Image (cartoon, rainbow, N blue to C red; front, side):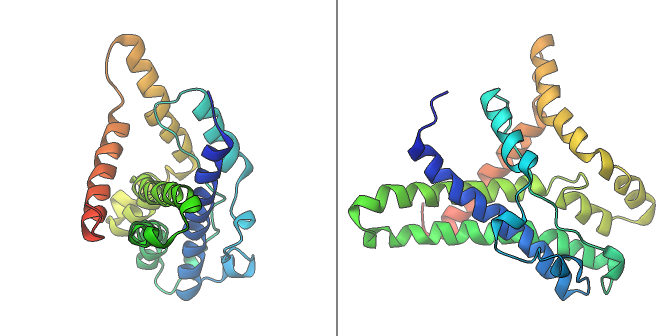
Length: 226
């Protein structure tokens, strides 16, 4: 696989910003709602080194990329949140979880709006700037949609646990230790098995791609980029 230095340069910055702002938003909202755990640990920060997980942020995406995985994903170092310290634990858990994806959507909108400023960018930097903005727009939307899957420990899973009635929330919350294994099974192993038996089992990826497409089109429309 031919990965150029230019290609790396237009992906690294958008990925780092998307991940850093996503995680910092969780910690900031938790702090505002009564839990200072992340604040005391210095995780309410825009320093990317505070949030990068060596395996989840670097090694796993690289392995999936070179293995031609049907779906590329990774994760940052989770921001610690003590939900018991929140002012209203069950409801505030939802706000803390939503903070990351909402921040990514805001960043995507900012990137789309910034396209309108490209005529003022020096000609020799215009293509590099445009490619960074395109990737920032896409990465932030993908990160938001992916994290809203209703599987703990993803944000969507925690939103579901916070909103569902107790008899449904408790069994879902108990899946959290197995969440990453479930994701790997749904996004990687299931499509591989499907190809071996001649079936298209890449259902989750298809749903995610479809939702991502809808959000992309909607944000392009509202930012005047259609």
